[in-house]
Amino acid sequence: MPPEENSIAGLTTAEPVAEPRRLATMFRSFRHRDFAFFWSGNLLSNTGTWMQTLALGWLILEMTNSPFLLGLNGFLGMAPSLVFSLPGGAIADRLNRRRLMLATQTGMMVLALTLAVLTSVRLITIAEILAISSLTGLASALNNPAYQSLVPDLVEREDLINAVALNSVQFNISRAIGPTLAGLALGAVGAAGCFYLNSVSFLALIIALLAIKIPARHLENGPTVWRAMMDGLAFVRRRREIIMLLSIPAMLSFLGLPFVVLMPVYARDALGADATGLGYLMGGAGLGAVLSALTLAAQAKIQLRGKYILRCAAIFSVALIMLSRADSFRWAFLVLVVLGATMLGTLALTNSSLQWLSPPELRGRIMSMYTMAVLGMAPLGNLVGGTVAEVWGIRAVLALGGAICLVYFLALLFFLPRLPRIAQLKSSSS
Image 1 (tube, one colour):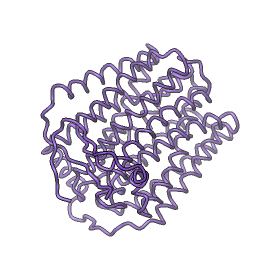
Image 2 (cartoon, rainbow, N blue to C red):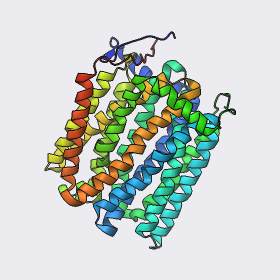
Image 3 (cartoon, rainbow, N blue to C red):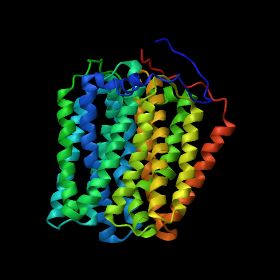
Image 4 (cartoon, rainbow, N blue to C red):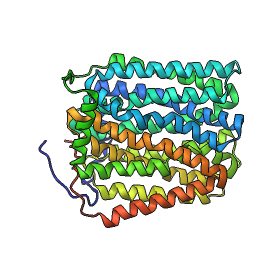
């Protein structure tokens, strides 16, 4: 398909697709067998990961009653992405991506099992939790660039936006199901049971990685990892639209997404909810994200432009401020649905735009910058958010983060209307 240009001014969708064809359009990437395997394995694995995330947060709160330590755990779990995402992207471009993912997934499975055993025999301490979170974060930092750059190898180029949207669907289905299951499981099998279930869930993705066939590609042998990183950064410096796109998830992750890590504090202190209530609240965010991802996947043609991404980000910021003011469980649940939908819309469209703009030989490095923007800035936000919550309370964290994000995104929206053209992401249903 020849490249087409568009301004960074808005989003346009194609004419409505006939209803009998809409479902086929929505799930068209599943006609690629390997993508379907990869999608299914990730769905089961991510469900287990979300179960562990919620159970671990609740366990830390029960052990320490400290929002700061909750934020510190989130910081240590994501901090390696800030340091290792860029070299991880260079490594992903130089090594076999499937083997790299197999190694990292196996490592995370062993760490989850270790956490489960220590918890079940009541030998777990906060120091051991923080150490395991750090090692898991390191494995994740090396895994994510390979994971992001593997998706385009499993589908045709015209199906890329649909594959990214469906990948977001599976991630957010797991975001909806995992915390809800964890909230129910905490009362039945305890935190250790959630950790055991997570360790088993990694087998689904490991089996899928062994089953799929990935097209052979030339592996770079010439430049060093450092030289490869510098080449990727040099390419991005020449593309102002990529810098703008990367700044959006960076700001969102630093000041907006810490609400996920601090949700146990919000559920308990602001709403008086227990672990089951926490699971339902997290499920609300996952539900909104699933609906948003399905909407994207259903589009037969879509032009992704910066103004639409920024509008999603601005609505997310407003919803975060509204969450800080919510005084009932039902109202908080509804706001979290909006938060999940706009968070997904912002991140998935940014991801798709970057995938489209990335040359195949640089895709791992550019997507590692996206990973660093999302997962690398989040630990700093978690640490700051946990500290502020310790002093001023959780509502202050949400209101302040939402307000600063809103100012930044509105500034981009209104004062940078003539940024360079980014891309037209388009796929045909015919």
